[in-house]
Length: 330
Image (cartoon, rainbow, N blue to C red):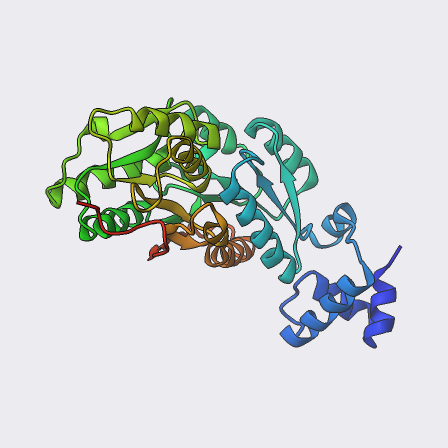
């Protein structure tokens, strides 16, 4: 097993310097830290979290309470985020347990900070449980619903960008796929923005333009699209609440013999590289997953150093136009 002494010998520095560099001690120059961590990764060094915590009162580990491993956007984000945290010298521990169980585990392992994904924290009861955390908490999700530091995306503006894009292409009948039963704070913001922007632009939308479903997975998008295509006056364009729903919409459109974008224009929330590789390269709105990962990693690092300072960071989205949207036929 590789030890700190092995790294010190390879780096040509003292044991103490390596130890401090791995703990992100401010007395060590950034270039030295980067060199030490590069050698540590090259040698396959694995920090002993428990031992590190006893010596420095910090474990060098960040915990993540993960809602599901099945959602495409979240899987992409965790990959990028892990890279960013690793580059800053942190080890990532991921829990897919329910919130209360994850909290108990992370308290036991003395995480330096914990990241919670907001689409699993909708109930006040869960937020009450989160309050028992003994370490700093950062939420990636809707701001204003909890007492923790937050990184939030202006999801409403993202959907407004999508509506404007489709309106400029001449679409007047637009549907939104993305309201799960039981509610979802992040989807609620998107739905309100969809209705408000469409009405301001004089488009023919109503509450019935919102497709409701059981969840936010691919099958849910498929079922919702089947219902949408059966309407007496089907929409010429649809905005999807996420990439997994978009996959389901494409499957239903293909089975019905509909072409994208000739018969149906599609805009999807989730600004992911994978949007380029769907059935049709897909127009997307949102913040790039790389940008989100960088901001979250920086926010966690700051939170660890200043745990009592509450921070709220809003990220502004963009629209990336691809081949899934076109001017309305007829």
